[in-house]
Image (cartoon, rainbow, N blue to C red; front, side, top):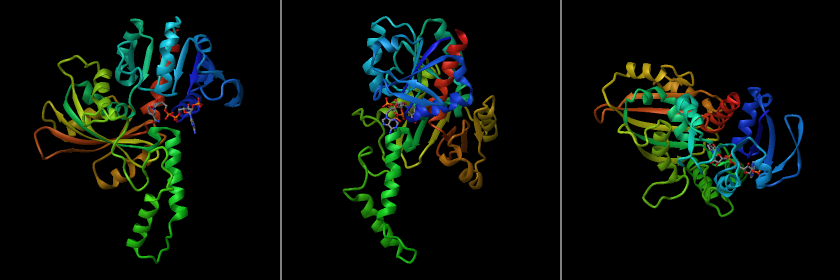
Length: 369
Ligand code: NAP
């Protein structure tokens, strides 16, 4: 049986991964070892079994694994990966972080979209399989057939990303903001509403308001920047949209390269990212034709009719959280130019946006060996 080392299993992506692996009975398929960066050599109970945590910073412990699956983050990958390979480790590296995504010796794993490329990469000796950016993965999977049929000329993506997309500490901070506001707001039903809003604003703006992680309140607010500042007007999260989409579709050096740009915004949803996408098609299609293409051979979407009732109930972070289905809706033709359309995709960024492609990649590797 293959030895699989799991790193970052305590984090949000790791926790969702373990849950999915248990649901799919994956633990039978290999021998699993749990690693920790913060508490090596301690005993833990996972799914009723006792494990002694291995040291995630020990090259020797890591080198014993046939496959390493890490959800620990980019800093960890940057600190350990090269040293591990330089010590001769030949195993497979599966990673949720962006550290190696754009490297030539890595492929982005999203098998419903690029399974053939993944198999081809394996045949060609590629050993690094990296999960894609959560927003781009969800939108790409939601609109898979549209991209596969080479219909899209360009797209503009405006994302509304959940607090949990930033990790466990951040979503906890959002919830502590909710508690702080509720504990400190003088709110009774008879109070003048403008006074209540002004009081709430005071609480949100107070020095003691919990904001160590996000730096600013997320509750009652939006944060119009995700990831680092590329110093050219764009955030790294926005840059990832174009380069990763084209890498996944195998178009990075193709004449069919798709231009993608937009703004990535953190909002106070707990879980599930949304992307409002404006796209230009290479030809004019009716909405009926477009809907048929989007639905074609895609078991992972829930197509939501473009009306108020369906949209507010089924096209939202709350409606899609904990589901493997990506809601695709608000499909309409825009009246501002030729062949321009809008669509909203909403999906659980911890499932298809992070853990699920990694779990499936692990299964592909285990099935081959
Ligand atoms: P996370 O929740 O912050 O967990 C990462 C690590 O932080 C854990 O493995 C744990 O390591 C440590 N940690 C510190 N405090 C913790 C706490 N209170 N609860 C749990 N763990 C804590 O990060 P994540 O969101 O899972 O993201 C992991 C990687 O996946 C990142 O590279 C991220 O960019 C990527 N990713 C995330 C998402 C998402 O939606 N969150 C989506 C796509 C990709 P130790 O146990 O070793 O201390």
